[in-house]
Length: 491
Image (cartoon, rainbow, N blue to C red; front, side, top):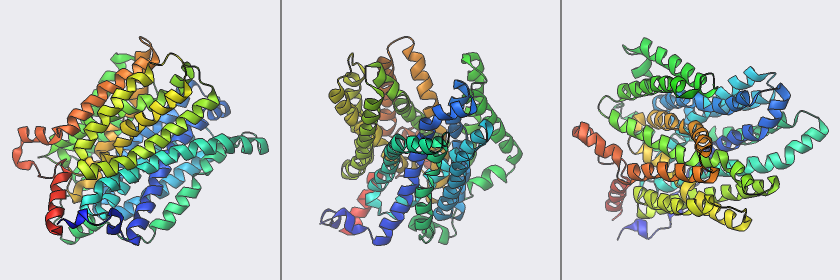
């Protein structure tokens, strides 16, 4: 009999495994905490520096502008020198950026510090996800992925509560320092994360692969030390400038944005092709799937308080409802871990997303703010719709061998994350034609179905077969292959 069915799942994890997990989890919590802090602090920052609405929005977008590059470079560090050094480097960069925001003397300093935070956030995500997934037993890696991403949801909840009580108290003591002190509160999880990470062992999979001396060329070497290094450096500069022009709203309208978006896409595709000349189809399909994932989640994430206010909820009620939605999100991450291991990652992904889209319509077609009804629907919509994203690191990592995993995960995921910046803008644009609730429902259902098809049908693997069948790996997007291997070993 398969012993994995007899033993409780937690008995497979040692004390060191749990310590390693929480060291990574706190870093992900910090991601969620800091990312939301800027949204809470923005009204006070605008007042302090006399900013326009466009300048204020650019501070939020700044983190998206640099995420793709952080995922590429810090992910490559994780592949070349180990997951642990990449995690430590990312958290130190995060610490610097967060603390520097508290003492920023002006707008442009704050903008640069937000770029650093976005860069570090991408590295933190890719290194932590790769580390935990590779440290846990193969048959439990959906749990590893889902449990890890729950840190982000708890970070959002924590930020909401700290902002609710802390800023007012600080401003009453020292006017104008409330938002600055808010950024300084991030020091606590940073210190804890650094302390816990200092003696962590390296991820087992990476250590085993690295000791075999059979590793392939690193992404840093491929892109920036090869024949095309000059063109690739130029590509980084061009893509970064293009994204700044777009998200700082220097250019506007389809005629201005579309050419810049095409240039960025061309640079990203060129990097993916060079990264793996045989399996580039998989990389591109993953980026598009992640983009669609952010496009169905972030219009809701970014515009939810506005929608709740439009159906008659007060500011305090909105804060409580959003916090409760965050709890649903956290529960969804944990549920995804258990369900993914129980019935298969791709199967549960499709089921969970379909359930969430059934809930979307009654949630966002409210004509009156029935608080209990909206809160309940929102809790479950976030549980099944947002929480399932906890399996994304596991899904993406399954397509990359260990020696390319952190860079592949970091780059493809964070390029796709640009959908998080595009989604709310598109949602607001559609809302100009229909109601905001209908706009959110349309975008959610439309882009969620793309994700259901891509992950449910394993489109990256299917498309790769059409282009180069010899380059397909059995485990591409299919954790059940690994589960069957474990079952045989445990018999």
